Amino acid sequence: MTAPREHAGPAPASTAPERRPPGRRDRFARLERPLLLAGLALVTVHLLDLALAGPDTTLLGVAVIVAAPLAWVLAQPWVIRPTRLALAASSGLIAVGFGVVSHGLHAVNSGPDWVDVSGLGFIVGGLLLLASAAAAAVAPRRARRPGTRVARAAHGLGWVAGAVLLAFFAVIPTALGIMVTHAPRWPIHESALDVAHREIRIANADGDKLSGWYVPSRNGAAVLVIHGSGGSRARVADRVEMLARHRYGVLALDLAGNGESQGRSNGLGYNAQPAIDAGIDYLARRPDVRSDRIAGFGVSLGAEVLIEAAARDPRLRALVADGPTRPMDEPDLDQGRRPGFGDRAASNCLPG
Image (cartoon, rainbow, N blue to C red; front, top):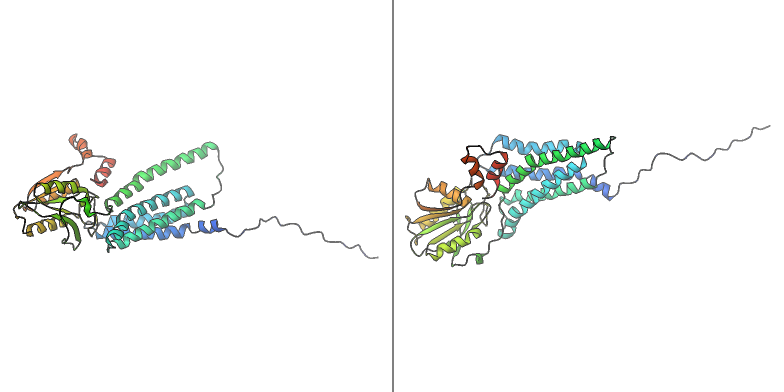
């Protein structure tokens, strides 16, 4: 007698979830870190280029420029998605915005200069940071931590407080510092000056070619006109026209890195004196100008750097200083109180 056969039933269904192949969104999210690394590298190279080209470079400043992005890269895997998105987006917007209006416009309007090489990389780095922010936006959410609504609300408030502190002590000072060294390069049209003039280019002691307008003198006297921080000769065209109507010769120069001039801009005027010297030399050589009848006319920062020049160069026989002081400094100095952090940041970094 044979034993009854046992028939195996159907195999139990597997309980493990099927792993679907990564979609386009997942693949883009995985690019967040490579995009961040490439963007920070290009931005850091440009900031180091600016720092090392200045006369007052410090080891601490260079260390901060290198350490800040390095700390960001090391901390990024442990940072929550909203923070990653906010940091990359704000940094990318700063780099693209200032890079385009300074180096991008200069390369388009006047042709690329050697100082624009890392500046154009600065723009590309900003675009890569914005792409990293977009990748962070589509990255999968982390599992919600267990906790009460009160705990989650406290976590959200802590994030907002941290974001405000980071913006005030890191993002805004960085943006202001970049603004000082990235003057807008809006195109200058010859029709902006409604008097007969010639467009000139003269070299300063640093080898930078400076662009300017010259109106020939009809009374033997000439005035060197200098614009304010982040400006150009187009911003002082009305002063040039006023002086020309009174028969003065007028030389309106773009400071280095401003307008159509070569070189690096500095909104605090640290590199303005070679341009002032070149302008005075040009006027002193003019056959229509008497060397003892040279004056200066400066607006805001232009007034400040001309005051400095007049203290050391006796060829400047007269000076008009239009707004050389920043009003936000006066109340604190009059009352004998040192300006606070916000006051110093504004007075040192905002355009004059």
